[in-house]
Amino acid sequence: MSTLGFETHDHGACVDDAMAAAEARCAASDLRLTPVRRRVLELLLAEHRALGAYDILGHLSAEGLGAQPPVAYRALDFLVKAGLAHRIEALNAYTACSHVGLDHTPAFLICRSCQSVAESETALTQGRLGDAARAAGFQIERTVIEAQGLCPACQNEAAV
Amino acid sequence: MSTLGFETHDHGACVDDAMAAAEARCAASDLRLTPVRRRVLELLLAEHRALGAYDILGHLSAEGLGAQPPVAYRALDFLVKAGLAHRIEALNAYTACSHVGLDHTPAFLICRSCQSVAESETALTQGRLGDAARAAGFQIERTVIEAQGLCPACQNEAAV
DNA sequence: GATCACACGTTATAACATATCAATACCGAA
DNA sequence: TTCGGTATTGATATGTTATAACGTGTGATC
Image 1: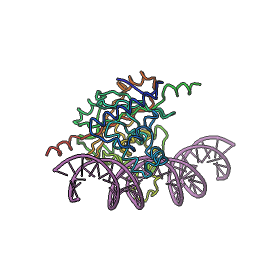
Image 2 (image 1 turned 180 degrees about the vertical axis):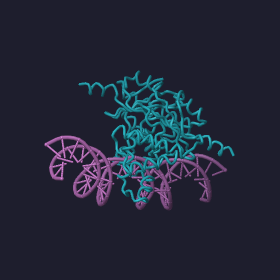
Image 3 (image 1 turned 30 degrees about the horizontal axis):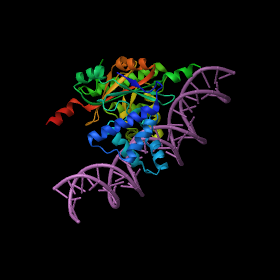
Image 4 (image 1 turned 90 degrees about the horizontal axis):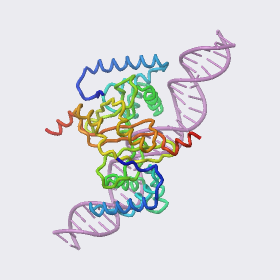
């Protein structure tokens, strides 16, 4: 299990790596990373935060890449389906995927103070929840696991 | 751990019990279960499904209990804060709590076909997610755990 | 060069949620 | 019993998130 998002890191390289991984994945799966889609992914990668569709749309329209909601939603839907981004249900917002390529059952740690989002790759949180589902005869297709609270940095600030 | 929602049961008694538990909790905590709040809780209890705020509002306005969105949202907020209902983030909808009184970290099993919702009381899904949070230095305050898939009944229908 | 699949442009609207302020009900203390 | 604070409700307006529907462009394939 690895959790990415809060630790300091070389963000330029982080973004470059993620874009390269996205390129590779699209090429391999015959998906088209068009200009709008690429730009939306860049916007999401620029920050380890969740952005709303209308935040994205604001950037796009400022750059002449489209001004109507469907432009942003279509790009976000593509990225989510391609496994390059995730939707954060608790925020009605979106964030870039930190584990491109891995088969996904992501869990998120969401800071309520700075809105940063860390993606924790738990793979089989199926543990307890899976037990409950089996007991109930329920067939899980997708799980949403989102924890809200305070990230390390914001805990320190609160303590000051 | 117990999971409620899919098994057949005496629903009349189920609703009555839940209303009695709600009454007791409000009396004990000095909370007012006013007519609108009571009616909203009844509406949620009537089905083991999640209802949108505007579904609720439709019923309320048909019954002369209020016609504007804030009426429904205020009642729902009250119920959620009182621990009598939960918000399902993945659906932007609300469902009655099946475990009134217990300290809550609920997990939900949501059928994508019939929209029924079962609440599984896992208490400490803290297991894996808690590990990840501790490793990252993240302080969890609230968790959202929602599994989407097919309930037993809808699996059978799909198989026909 | 016709056709097909996919992406994009555009308008409109649906669905979900909150801010604000005024009016009223409830309840304990003077 | 009246006063004053708090909780609740009523009402209007607006903000935010998301999709339906329909048309256009573009590149691949036959």
